[in-house]
Length: 335
Image 1 (cartoon, one colour):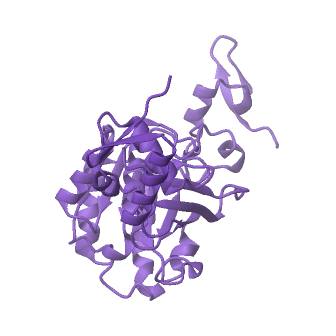
Image 2 (cartoon, one colour):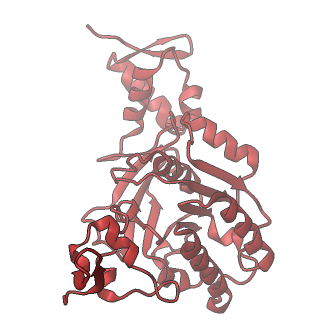
Image 3 (cartoon, rainbow, N blue to C red):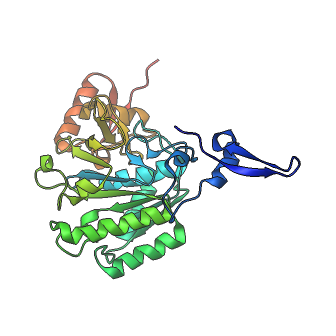
């Protein structure tokens, strides 16, 4: 790289001398790196520009000033995952084994009513510092009025991360038509540039998840990260999912997908090395319970449907691991 700089006049020696940019202190150098036309830089100076040290809000998944899309079939826990993501970024806490960078999060929900969203947040038992939530069925981002609604909130909050859940509910027109989806992409690009924020879109997959998310392929082309979330648990089992990036523009693909289970205790996903059986789930739940529980309690907690839960209780009782008193079961403490 050729060395660049500028001429200055030394007031003491009354002579001009040349100063190279790379000889300046970093903080002083930044004042000389001025954009041309608002966004263009001299290439050599651009390489000396100080940028944020951590380029991701979610390690490898969500770049700063980037775009990511997570798609999954219905009833896969997408909204629970959104709240978990918002909480993790709001606090700068790890997410499913990935590092996050703390930032202000705006989570907009287009499918759940206020009471349902609030109930899910209360279920988690965590605080949501640095997180702002809103639920609306009226914001359509392919309409000027809907874009104006979003603009007002963005102007007031200036979030670092914007989460939109789910994408298809914020669309009035034909989601399969690229020409109708392009204005939404363009508007979100404008917001990213104006507020230096990142955007995370959540969406449903089509009936065949191998064909990726529903609607126009323009979204797959637009985002930096395209992530599939697939439900792998069977009916009656605790909710388990597999998260697998289809492509990551700014990172290599991981060797393995993330396998996680939604805990009925805090309603957050936790990484699991292998899927626990209903018997293991029942055993763990009773071992940590503070009082005896009935089969109905265990079923309501999402550990399994009636038949697998009763079978698990019978096997654990025969093994002497639990004891039954009336209609309730307790963990047997061992010396």
